[in-house]
Length: 212
Image 1: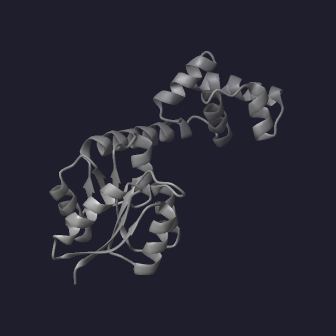
Image 2: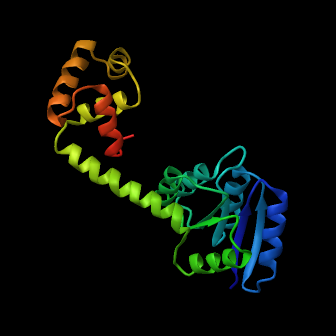
């Protein structure tokens, strides 16, 4: 049985290139090509391919939204993300959503074919520099979250995040349905527990611990 593929990218020239590339491989069969995320999701539902090669930035529905839908619907198609560049948060989100491969568009075409075969065989193909930075960030966030969880209450952690995002006491009070006085009391306790001396220091602490 050949490896079945659905291709999704909003650039026709790239789609043509990918389709021509895979048609040269006897063990790979292209079932559909899609120009946006909605078409990609529809094609996966219809064809149930082994692999979906998915551009992360597409009209109507981006790659991460497609991944969320695939996970929610428990579709077994394995996904390879194809992109010009990924930031750390996108990589983390993609990994959490079960993506099995991350391929930069600048990679040699034969490497994309190798990626498809490896992912189909149950392996992973993750572009090292982007994924390495993302995993480092994830580990730092998790370690920071564990440390803070031992010092602050869940409500205090929520307030720290809101302060670090630039919100003032009045905005925080409205969002958390409490008085400004209660917010100030919480902040006083937070400053003491974390040994910081104000909002700027608290924001820097939150950033260092990966709470943003």
